[in-house]
Amino acid sequence: MKHALLLFYVFLFSSVLMQAQNKKSKAAPAPAKKVQAAPANSKAQKPATTSPSFNSLTNDISGESSKKLPPYRPGFLADSLAKFNTVLEPGTEALKNPYIIVAPSSSDAESHAYFLKLASDLGAVKGVRNTLVKNSADEVLAIAINNPSFVGLINEQKKYIGIKTYSFSSLKALEDSKDPWIQYLNQEKSLAKEISLQNTDYLPMTSEIKGMNDPIAP
Image (tube, rainbow, N blue to C red; front, top):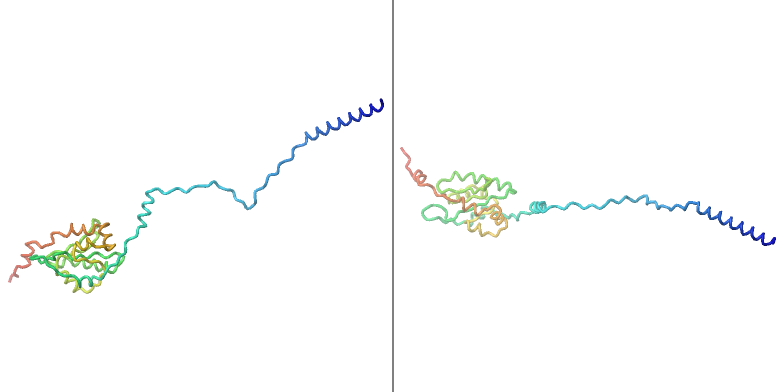
């Protein structure tokens, strides 16, 4: 009996001890999770942004501004004049085909300046008229020479024969030219068309002819 009572006390003590340990383990807070710190040299990532696309109009303007001009390869006016054959229209004292001198590119400042001086001399030649061919912006595109004496004037004025530019013995020759610069002028500035429209009525009027031939009064 004494033995059984001792075992009972041992069992009771063990039960109480186990209950106390269970309560303690429930009351203890759970261990906190460790938060991994970001590396010191890392940068905050920003959301990716897309650059705005250009509209079609902007692309068109950009393409137009980047378009290059064709090559400009003029020759000396003296070389062209040496090959020019003066063929006259019967009974008019005018050239059968106009001798056309194209205005030099403004990039050649010297030739362009001499060309403008040459153009200003047109009024000094009497009889058959020569034509200054201009566009709507009053830009001189070419000289259409109808008066054969003007060709002689160019040869006399040595400063003019050194002009570097394009020249043609007829309007058809200019229209049929395969030179990229002349094709550009025909397409972009309507050079051949402007010459055909403006180079008209170049023959002197009857009154002008009569006035030229009147005898000088005593």
